[in-house]
Amino acid sequence: MMRPLIAVLNGPNLNMLGLRQPEIYGRATLDDVEQLCLATAERLDVALDFRQTNIEGELISWVQEMRGRARGVVINPAGYGHTSIALMDALLAVGVPTVEVHISNIHRREDFRRHTYTARAAIGVICGLGVRGYALAMQAVFDMIEDEDER
Image 1 (spheres, helix red, strand yellow):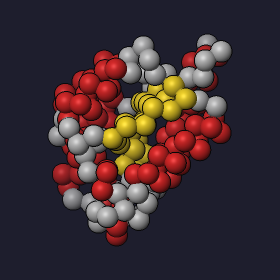
Image 2 (tube, rainbow, N blue to C red):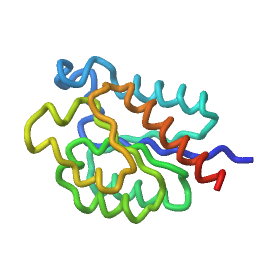
Image 3 (cartoon, one colour):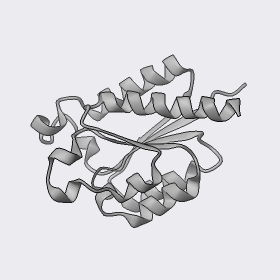
Image 4 (cartoon, rainbow, N blue to C red):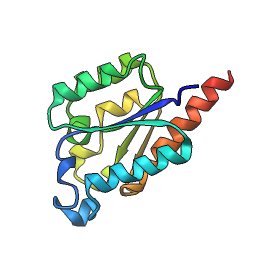
């Protein structure tokens, strides 16, 4: 039996983790996040597709690619969450459980960061827990997959 696939998709500037505003985002790098996600995937016995892009259209294409391929999506849309209706539409069209992750607590930051269009397409949003939020999001997606399989 094939292991279910969880996609972890990352938006713009996350390749700069560890360098960009460490007082907000911490010192963990994107490689550290990927290692955390790999360890979580191993623990959950799922396959992982981990990606990052600075290009909005590429992120949208990756989301669309997950339809019929992934059982769930964890997405850190970064700045695109606040601006991209097209990304929201893609997530809504894919039809798989999606959890949105933000490393910082977007509700304690500037007003424009407190709303994300992409949250409308997510079953849940995890923010403010640092990179640990990724592991929690993967666990939540896994639990939703299991619930779906039990029905």
